[in-house]
Picture 1: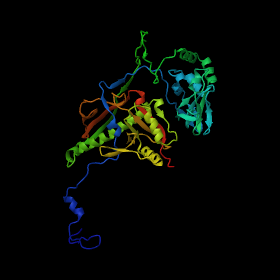
Picture 2: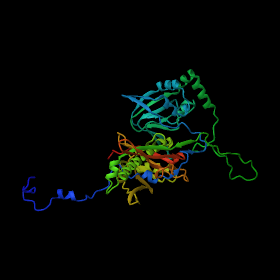
Picture 3: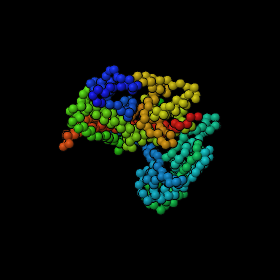
Picture 4: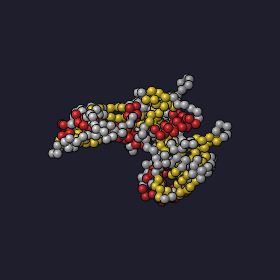
Length: 468
């Protein structure tokens, strides 16, 4: 602006006072601390009881159990053709611990694909079991007879499940239920005749099957643990049974996992731009927040110790109608004593609310730190956006009993680390490089352990996109 030039407002009138743009040059701006959209409530980290681990590992000792080999089977889909991964056949009880890849490949090749229409009966109660079915896609209902002769749905199976596995070992096995397709299904079928033909050609498979058939029947409780022999209600002087409690020979050990990053701050920024907020502190604060978000994600999704991957097969349930209804939540809670809380994606909580509204039910809420948390049967349902939602708009709901004293799920960490700012979270100064950049190593150690299988349950394949 030249000397004598008159300043005018937006309306073209002469300006009569100092403008705000110029005034800000002499003012200290009121500002917020740096904000971050990624920060969530992290209810899992808040509510999980944490146990200090020395030596970087936690060993879970359990009673010896004979129920092994239960798991999910993974398939490969090419166009409309589905194939089972040969190594995944080891999830079948008859093939557990069997590792001959050539034989497993031959068995996988003999699995025949079959498409089943909704409502079709796959097997009937009382008939001889001749085939094992591997469920690649869809839902199958196990139907039994109710107390008054009507049909009753005993269980719902979904992707990755199998049924009819007794056909591979016991030639006299019969179906103890009727298997009926609840939706259109794709299954792979392995017949006992094909299995026996492969066993006749393979000495290793024949010996493996022979060992399984020769094993004596172990007396177990309903959890698969070796039964403790007891006597009760007797009189006189009968022989008291002898017993002992056996342990697993190779208990599982959970090693602490790690999340790390190197935070870099130029010394010029750290020296000159620390008012009114310390730049180093704010950089560390946001880095730690991101690290905690990743920590909770790993506790839910990690393949080694994540909750979704460590839930036992018999603790995985399928919703009877696809949507998360109150009956499904009741079934989930009934599988364990003392469920402390449920975890669900916010969209799954909305779907639960829709189903309750349809039935005229209003869930109770509780106050947790100023937040209104919905409950079901008194068990809080915490939101967790780390639980994945598939492209088909399905997700999972997790139920946990927590604490060492309750034989539940626990978090693992190691406190007392050098330069620790929180338990099991440290920030170490790594020096200044030749470009005058200060380096800090930010590290978090963590893991989670399931002490007994029924401490953790999952309601899988919950549909959250159905509105009617």
